[in-house]
Length: 232
Image 1 (cartoon, rainbow, N blue to C red):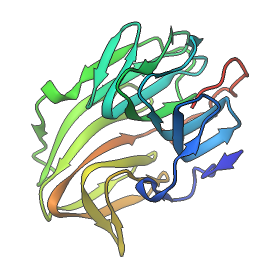
Image 2 (tube, one colour):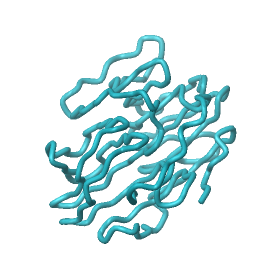
Image 3 (cartoon, rainbow, N blue to C red):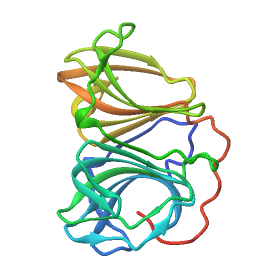
Image 4 (cartoon, rainbow, N blue to C red):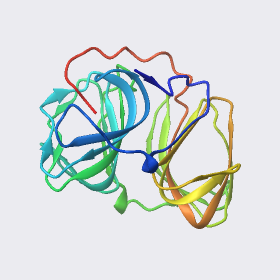
C-alpha cells in the first residue's frame, strides 16, 4: 500500500474528518496519514485504542515515535497520559495497550537504524519557551539530532507564521487552528511540506498548538520493514 508516498510533494490530511478503519488487532483503529507497506509499514497514523485493547509483545525493527492525544497509553514501562512524547528506538520492545482507551499520533519505521536513544517526556510539565526571532511563537523542544528536530509550537492568536521548511516539515494540529492559503487546519489536521518549501500560515482567533518535525524528508531511504508482527 502507498499513501502520500511521494515526499517531494505537499500532502494534507484532515484526519478528524475521516472514518476510523479497523486494524488487524481487535479494538485498535486508525486514520492513515502516509504509508509505504502493508501491515508492517513505514507509516504515519492516528491510532485509537478501545478500553482494554492490547497488542502482543513486539520489537521495533525500525523504531516508533508517538504523542498521546487522548486518554492514557500503557505498556510494561508505565502509563503515558495526554501530552506524553515517546521515542522507542530500533531493537526496543514492549507490549502496548490501554486500560481506559487512548488516541495516539504515531510514526513507525522512520529512525536511523543505529539510533538507540530512548525518549519519554510528559510535555504537560515542560514550559514553553519564547522564540525572540519568531514573534508570536513559543516552543517545547522534544528531540534533536543530526537528522531531525521535533518540538511543540504554540502560536499566538492571529500570529502570522513564516518558516522555511529546510529539508522538509510535518505539522499536526493539537489545539486551535491555522490557515494556510485558503485552507483551514483544525484539530488532527496534518500537513507535510517538502524540502525547500516555506510555511506561510496565520493562527486562528484562539491561537494554535502544533506538533512539528523538521529536517527529515531528505534523509537517505529508510530500511524496508521486514514482516515480524502487525502494527498499527
